[in-house]
Length: 403
Image (cartoon, rainbow, N blue to C red; front, side):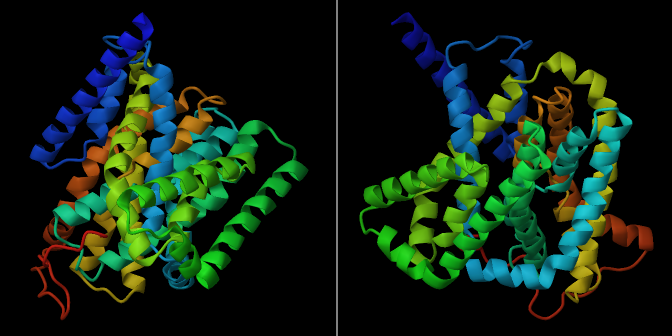
């Protein structure tokens, strides 16, 4: 009875604190992610006050948070959109991989962490935060800008690349043999390919089977299906997060829109719990020794992300200011970097504090680079702001809810 009482008090305090921190972040116009991480650091091991009774519950909630993050992201895209993006944006995706993964891998090798940690840190520095970037685009009212589809295309390619990267990483972390790793990768590729094929050919049938006019039934079916597929994917070593992403892709039309509306509050709650849990599992005393490394990595990979966005916009035929806006928008890292670091801490414990400091830096800098990269570039080149091209809007009408 005492344990249950303490559990309820701790959970209530954590959720209330998250709500207050989220409101504070909204007022100052920043992402709440760094505040959630700081809250976890304050109440985790080595923090001001350590949570005991609720730690196991928060760990489970964190797993659900990752699953819901990827599910909601998958609901934003159809299978045909993903295939189109792959065909047109893959050169930009390759440039993104080289420019942003290499600094992380090199840093890990210089620090003497070994090749497996190098693969993990490469992922931490490679993947941008879709959640933070989507919020920034909405806050800056750029959802109607010509460069925004380019930014989203790069993010989609990164998300799809996770379907390959995560199984490879988990195989390396588990120390599986080359043959076992090849089998795991083939299973992952086969699973992803099969789901995309079914989504392309039979997506309407799946959506029709899941569809319901009753919001309660729709919520239960979609959430239950997602957790089931995520668990099966984890059993096949494909990653629960990727399984949830594929469920989101398979659903389309009114079902996807309705599920997105119903699940967004749950996603926000459990995603906040996820960031808190990562902070809880990191000792604040471990951060100062890696702070300089995190800052150097943040500066280098902020510049490489700007270069990635500039190149992707250039390939799409966008000129001038739009290239710089695309580059500045891609800088923020967040949920995916934390997920990857969370997987790798068993092999290299120092990657957790480094990733926490790195994400804290870039999740704060990201909204600033999105806003100020283009004016700064114009000032440095001493060029006046060009007129907006036909069809582009700096301040379009409010975007639809699905954006």
